[in-house]
Every structure is written in C-alpha cells, then in structure tokens.
Image (cartoon, rainbow, N blue to C red; front, top):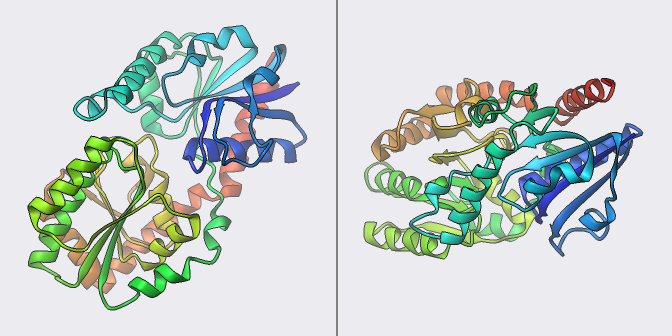
Length: 356
C-alpha cells in the first residue's frame, strides 16, 4: 500500500508545500511507501523533493491519495482518474471577493476553486481539515464524509537557527517594533495594521516602527498600501519584501508585538510562529484566528485602529499583562508541537488505512 501526496502547485516557502514535505518525511520514517507529486514545481525546491505528476502512475485500490486542497486547479476535476482511496487535506480556498478590486486573475482562480470545492464534495472518503473553521467550511460546501481536524506540521526546530545579524544590528535599539508576517494580499488587510500603527505612533509612542514582512504579486494592492502610508503621513513602515529565512527570523527576534488584522485565514501559521518567539499577539477575531489562538493572545472584535493601538500599548507597557498573554500562548503552542501533530496525523492515516 502506498500513501501518495498530490499538490496542484509546490511553491518554495509556502505553508501548504512545507506541510506536504513534512508529511512525506514522517510517512517515510514510519515505513510507508510514499511520494510527493505536483502539477507545477518551484525550481527553488530541492531537486527530487517533489516529483512531476506524470511520474505518479495509477494508484491501486488499497493505495491512498492524499490531496492538498487550497486553490483552483485542473487537478480538482481529475482526481477520480488517479485511482486509490481519496483523502483530502483542506487548507482553505480564499474567497474570491477579496481580489476583485485588485487582481482579476487571482479572483478567477479563487472563484474557480470555490466552485470546484462544491463539485468535489462527494469524492473523498475522508477529509483532514487544518482547523475547525476549515471543517465547517467543508460542511457548508456539502462534504458529508468523516472530517478530522489536525493542524499543519510546523518544524519549530528550524526557527531556532541563527537570525540574520545585519538585520538585528540595523534595528536593535530602544524602539518598539510591531510585526506582521504573511503574504501581502487583500484578505490580510495590511492597511488596517498600518492604520492602527499610525494612531499608535502619533498618539502613544513616536519611537516605534512597523515591519510588514512578506511579499505578494497583487501589484495594485501593493500600490494601495504604499499610497496609504503616504496619505497618512506615517513614517517607519517597513516592507522588507521577499527575504531569506534567516532575515525573517531576525524580524521575529526584534518584535515586541505581533499584529494581525486579517479577515480570512484557514489556519495562519505566523500566529504559531509568534507564539514560538514569545511575541504577544493582537489579532482580529475572524475566520480561523480565534480557533488557532484558542483563548491565547488578545482578540479584537473589529478592525478599529484605536482599539488595536490601545491593545498594543497595553501589551508594551503592562509587564504583568504581557507575561500573562505570553504564558497563554505558550500553553496553546503545545498543541502545535511537531511530535504532537505528527502523532495525531499518523493516527488518522493509520486508522483510515486499516479500513477496507
């Protein structure tokens, strides 16, 4: 019996792709015959880590095809042709509406993916949702198969590598550093973070800066953010762009508060990353975010910039509150530890594999 993974696209540094690579490792360590295949493969990935779809071959009736559902793709329509028993791991598909004002191509792909999701509802024998929010999303799309919830595999030991010294030297001072890490995209609402930071800097702490770490290919949205910073007249908003992993680590080491105003997340790996780096979190209570935090961090009911700025200020100034929030995050972080998630995922797959 083989357990084979399939991705529409294997991208370098992408959370879905990283999760699939981690699953491949644990399946091999557990003695399973396995492979990871994709329709499109980023050339920056290690050679042979992901194989082209044409090498997968037809699966036997006892084999398992673990398919990662995250975007519109021709593969979504071809799944029955591959054979095997289908298990879908659902990472969420961003609602198309967020992209409509900025990028018609992204809008079209997401809208296509959402239509395909509903059409796929009767195909998997089992689904694995990376959050309770995603499980509910599958149910609303018409999926009636068993759905297990298991977080993404995050190799936290990678985050203990040395951070980039040049970044540390440049920004290590007595200023307060706010950070958000994530793709620059409309549903992430970086403009709301900028609004909150502008109020915080003007009214509460002029010696502060904001790092918006991440890159994106939605040019019109990028232009809007730049124009927004200029219109607000706010200084010290820094867009590092596409950077190396050790530079990302450095920004986390510098951070005093992690601020997330995203309107749509299927899990939000950077929240778990902030927990690992002992950075207190202020986040808007939307989509999967309350479930990922699960009582930790500081949740905001809306995108009001003053409310967010005051929450940030309290976490910076009140040491007891800061320690309390970090402790709550440390407790939640235990649920995302690699070995715990590995054991949970293997149990789900082993139980399914044993069923005839």
